[in-house]
Length: 504
Ligand code: HXC
Image (cartoon, rainbow, N blue to C red; front, side, top):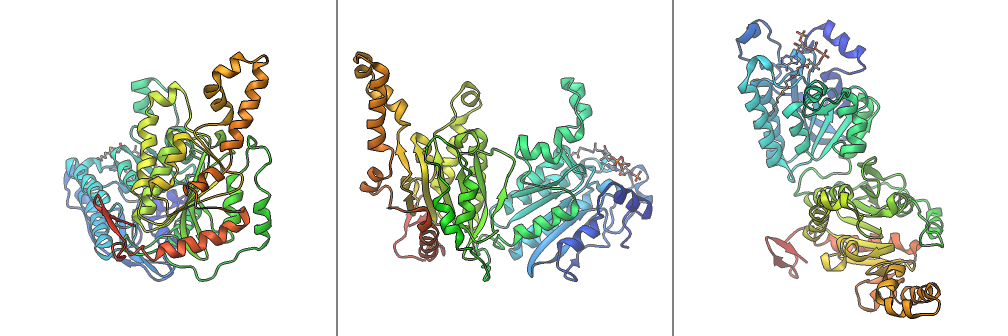
């Protein structure tokens, strides 16, 4: 019963550097915790000699078990059985496990390794995919859904993972595309390999489809187990507390040294993140995509927070279409699953240009704005340096509902940079001056003195407090602790009902 499609096909799977479906499950789940469901299910098709090719389980292993002691539901497609192809019964098994996960409020983890719809079965197989998509959509925002792509995933089959929260891909052995290289060649005359078209690297860097890349199956599964420790079981629960954490005191000193004296010199926001959070607790999501924004999970005194940070070291931290999409998706996930948001802001504005405008930066930028404004989880913003223009508003500003807004003394909160501002508002004075260049510099300095600091905003109460970098961790911990009390939505008397949700 546990021999899949037979030893020969298992050997082929291993030769390709892939584990079998059962080996993957045993690595994913805590030892001895797997309870299989539907292990004896067989397909009912008699088309094209299929009645002579029956395998217990019909190409997918389904069941439940624990990851670090917490319940998860799992399915793992078995490529050694008819290429892991999805039949009517194969789909029904996946649906059953999804229904159980939703009913019992636990994450679902799918391991995909399949040649797609079972060609011999025709429309019932396609219909099976749609049954899965329906459930992915219904489960979205209610239980965490993880997809581990560990082999082929092509055609409409890609849309189940796309509907889930996080996609993991294995380098060289996995690929995802709507149409494969042969169809691409016929239609567009482009010659491209499967790896270039839809491999892990392509989707991590170019499309953003892939959130986490792994060198092999073992690493992929290890990363998924690790991610689960940051997430709650479902949308009604909080992420688990990690009672034991460490914080190196030397980081208090380091953080005061990170920002360069010159505001135009880049720095790595990940160094700031590292100095604020519990040691080694940052798990970056979408590491290789839209590097001008950094998103990921971390822990503050053992509690999960979601971090969204502009990255001055990539495109000066500007917001563009990809950064907006990446940020918005992450914020919405955190909001769905009661994960507080920490925003680190150093943003010079939105990326200008025809490419961005014609591809809809207006619509995509609005997604990030919408996500922050809609989020009812505790939200704290720390302005480290630039907070300019519309991007200031978008990045979880006070008016979008930030619970607390802190600024470092280096913060510059203004409609735009001093140079551009001086050029516009002192245009006449500059052109009438004996030495226009000198005048421009003088006016630029005047504007910078007025606005290139956090104090005007603090006077107006738009910034709650100006903090030293080294004071920030403590302020975040106490800030999140206070606002956590209201996370139990609707329980606080001070809540007002805005739209369809409770807001503080
Ligand atoms: C039935 C399939 C199958 C499929 C593979 N097999 N795909 N059986 N339906 N879709 C079987 C093969 O017959 C073979 O059986 C075994 O799986 C292994 O396949 P190989 O071709 O030997 O493996 P490999 O060389 O590694 O190539 C893997 C592959 C290729 C690239 C995935 O098998 C392939 O191109 N398959 C068809 C892919 C496809 O077009 N699927 C439909 C896509 S459309 P034996 O008995 O020899 O071991 C789709 C629509 C979804 O999925 C719509 C959702 C809305």
